[in-house]
Length: 132
Image (cartoon, helix red, strand yellow):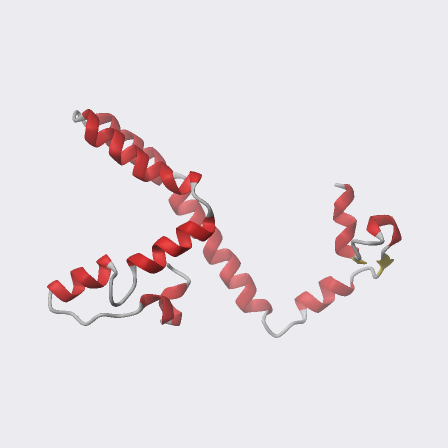
């Protein structure tokens, strides 16, 4: 709780918490009056909603489904694939997503091409980016 005071200071790491200048509500006023305030709040709420939707029911449903799988090798493979993101860094996961969605070599675009659709670089479409 001691570190919360940083929000009320112009914090300087060299001076530390006790040596930094006290500015009161300056940073809060700047945030609430900024041009991007509503976009920031909307994005935060959207990401929180996605997190709640995925992190609560999805693991329970997957656990129930995997509990019914009789093929042990398939069950172990599925568990490994599902738990891998928890043990792989964000940078590596982002790289994997970029590779999978690549318009030239990605499996998603390969599948779209096989069904007669054009390749699309999903990462560059602003409306898709937040959801990816």
